[in-house]
Image (tube, rainbow, N blue to C red):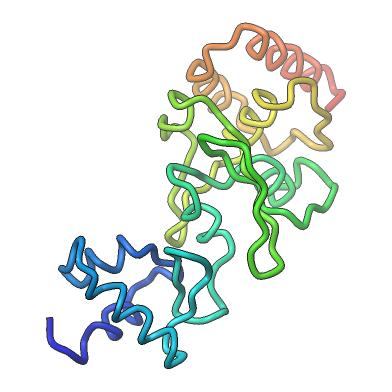
Length: 195
């Protein structure tokens, strides 16, 4: 790679958040200390923004949702973040909720990221998860099921937009009898007119 094209390669990318590993692969420079030296130089010059150790952005106007899925991987945005966006719950949350292999809460640049642990077989199953603008995000059916899986009995304000057929197609990945019974009860209650 030519000397002046390292930064250009990052700036031309559709991503707004990069790990050190992402950048090393883009620069065809895996495992080299030269990558870290170059990154430190660009940060000092103000040409890149260091979000936290090992995570960089083009500037401070990076996608918070994209970052949410890059802090710990594998991960995808789910739970209340998606449910509120889809109008299934009416309460507003400042946090971004993420399905991950661990439970943790982190605040970066005044944004709180709440990671909730989901077992690996569920986390690695892509059914109901979409990649939108470099971000893995649960569809509303997957976010609904994730929430019931993690929280148990939960109140939902509006289930009218839920595709129940899709919900029942995704449900078996959880291998959870309690959850299957609960979803069936919610489905029955919805069909009887009480959301």
